Length: 338
Image (cartoon, rainbow, N blue to C red; front, side, top):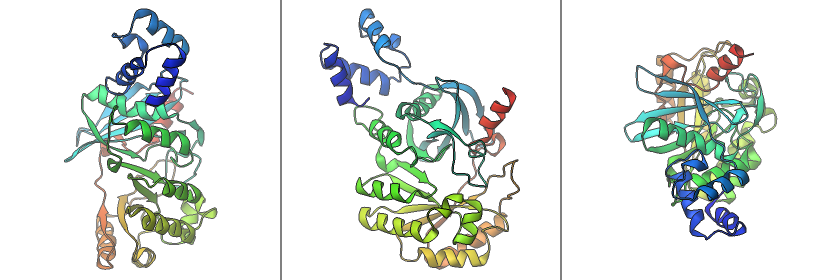
């Protein structure tokens, strides 16, 4: 619940309005996982709250810490027993957490482990939120940046994701700046226009991964519904309306989308747009045959885009010794417990 919703709920129970503020503080600042922890509330009130309401938390089922860079990968258990993944990463500017928005994914991107078994269900706003709070509780570190790039397609779970954003940016709660939050999408065009209407301050990251329909349709079935041209038009409209730069994610796969011709075509497509290209060394997944591009190819592709005026970076690989990309840990757990 948002704070106004909590205030209404307290009023319905005949409680003074300040109780809502106390509960909100316990949930979003002290990261309480049960009403019994809320010690400035009376015992009877805590019992009443426990009967009337539910706090949906995640439980740390497995945790892996990279010996190379300190990246932490979590496998979380939800209240119904389903599992999701999240990754905590350390940068010079602080800690960033990558969170999931669904249990699994239905987008069927050929190179992604999260989508192999499909989507079980959407996550609630509180289940997305709890991934952030659980990492803060576990490490004792303040998280300053959030990326919704874990399991699932955030814009398919649009309403819950938007509620999560309202809660995580609330100044009386964790108060994370919207400018420090990135939402990734594989290209759900109508929802991009819905976002545009909200005049967002967060960063929109679009998983493009190919410069044309021929290549993109082979690796991303969503392209059959919305073509590269339709997607990029929505992105242009988004940047022109919001004045916010879009980040295009581009996973480099050897012999698939990493040729000089692909670089030139991509530069032509993005020319004049307020954007940034993030080249990603593709994560190699056991269930497919895609191989990451060589470091030399990554550098060459990047230089070609830069020469054409497209701001480009190559994402640093974090947690390679713990399979820090999302989807694989959950699949292993499901197989072991089948």
